[in-house]
Length: 421
Image (tube, rainbow, N blue to C red; front, side, top):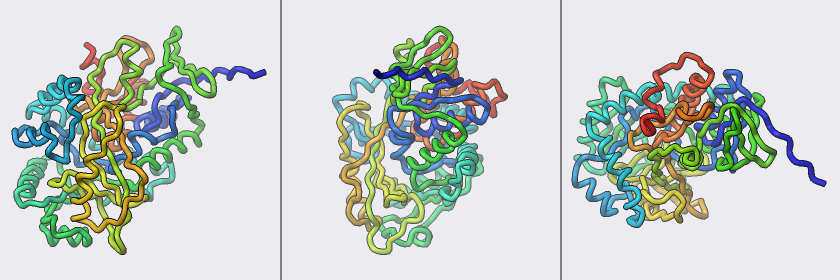
């Protein structure tokens, strides 16, 4: 005779064990809350696994839509490796793209940058805090990343854009070809120069880092169970989720499900304009004694090469397609020859490319905070390209809000009510 699992009680359920959910769970735990973390998979195995490993302190201006017609036409016709669209999906995402375009106007982008700056400014420091606690600080590479160019015109334009960021006090070096080769001796002369952004930090295994933070949470008494977020229900003043270990109950629940967050919110009556930008990566062995010291973005080529624990990771730009449709890693095939032209790569290591989906909101701000119509319902998702960057600082801000502490910054710009009012 089988006995039913006993109920699991906690103060808080956190749904989603990516970088945002794990960080929120640990920060709530640091402030005295008993937390159960729930995911259908292990920690850091979805979107958090597959990024370029950048903690992007220098990204003070959000990634908006380019305003020049030539670039937009290249994107629309799938003629650029930066952006690819599944044309069958375009009718569904056009309203979102229109909203994204409007939010990318200069005045709106300036406001978004101001709203995001308090999070960006603290991104590296909040990772340092968790890494120190988790015994992982040696993984933090404080060497920045390099934006590299194939044409003098591209480099000149990028240098002008960088000069406009002077008020932010960022540390950067403009590199000619010789200076670039001094920092990355094994890159080819196809790259004629670049910008070395020195404020960001990088990590060689982002998925492993999230697992390390989750292990810290467990060592300090947290619980992690496997379950399905779609079983979330409100039961009186409590929230319940079914898990493999039994029914989990708590007064508060956090939706930190990245690109799946709307599937938990929609049944509760919340409509948020969450879209996904899919991306791919694959690893290569470097040839012979070739070494890559920094992540290098080939801006004109439309890809990034990053030195990772597993090898050299080639990551792509953006694919607009349905979150759950079959992977189409055409951008990897398109950029691999270009990557081989700037750095000596051997064969692919991975049997098949990895694909992930970045959760994106059209105004380039995440949703962090309480849902207005349900007591005890909290949100932390929609970080666009900066999930890894902003996971720990989001966890801190959310935990401060949930425990009634003074918040380090005004959380109102990240309220879900900007979409649901």
